[in-house]
Amino acid sequence: MSPTPVTTNLPTQPASYSWEATDEEVAARYGVPIETILRFDLNTSPSPPELAGRVLAGGAFEAPLSEYPPSDYRRLVETAARVYGVATDELLVGAGADEILDIIGKTFLPPGGAAVIPAPTYAMYRVVTEQRGARAAIVPRLGPEAGWALDEPAVRTAAANAEVVWLCSPNNPTALPEPDGAIARLLEGIAADALAADRPPAIVALDEAYAEFADGSLVDLRLEHPNLVVIRTASKAYGLAGLRVGFAIARPETIARIVPFRPPGSVSTVSMTVVAEVLANPAEMRANVARVDAERDRLVDALRAAGWGVGPSVTNFLLVDLGTAERAANVATELLRRGLVPRTFPAGHPLAHALRLTIRDRAGDDRLIVAAREIGS
Ligand SMILES: Cc1ncc(COP(=O)(O)O)c(C=O)c1O
Image 1 (tube, rainbow, N blue to C red):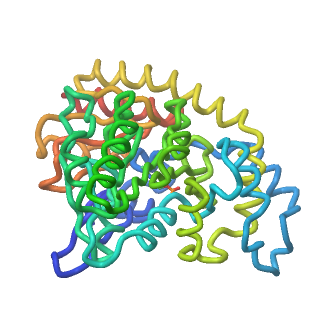
Image 2: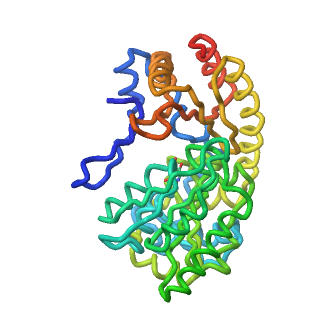
């Protein structure tokens, strides 16, 4: 068991994701009491909104729990559409952003097709692509000195031979958004190339899982680009990862293509009721974002003072450059021995020399800071 691995199997097999080690597994392997384990590897928020607790305690759900959830998730769709500023026929509900990615793959990626992946990025894009029997066309991002921005000309060229382009802004794990205008320019370029070649443009799946932290969404670009599908989630800034709710947003004709591929009831009645209520009352989400902003500055300063190479971030996580893969592995082991679980990157990964660390609450982050001082640079 490696701490938080992502593996790609033999080329003859579909890629697979080895799910994170559970708290129990980490405790057993590193000999730490389970109650001391803190997850810095999942980019979740430290606690759910109190409103979620009140809705659950009230027990008044959309439908009796003996029945299936309404297959159109109508109330959740209406609320989410209002919150994201789109029409109800421009939005589709799924069991987390991950299910949305899967449904996008099923809808748009034929076996033998191709998807462009500007890397490093979120591991599931490659998993979904290869599980569809499609080819992952990996396009390296520009380096850290260029903010890990996507290589626009290279992505545009690759998109000419692909059905899907997976984008992520702000990008996980590099913690920065694409530069202003980059995604709009790319969409224009892809549209122009498709027109010239007399074929449909690739679907551009833009994952905005961390958009609330960066205070910006490109959802309006859908109005000019029906090939754009924006992905949002309740898992990150809203603090509701356990409820598993995510959304696809696109022009109605694009959503209509995706609808047949979504399961009729993968989101529970409990989840749809709580998420609708929390989306409609975003005060706690906003407070969480403000708290992360302040905590990020404090954590970055403290980790840098301990000699760690912390990159800039607009999200609720940090990318820490430890120089070599060996050093990163050693630091990961030292953290795990203290019950602190980092996100590691496997050998051969462009970020094998780095760790990704979630910004948690003050008390949790203090444990990380103490550990960093002890481990040193
Ligand atoms: C970029 C990105 N997209 C999607 C997800 C999955 O989100 P969800 O919990 O909504 O499935 C994550 C989770 O870490 C993520 O980082």
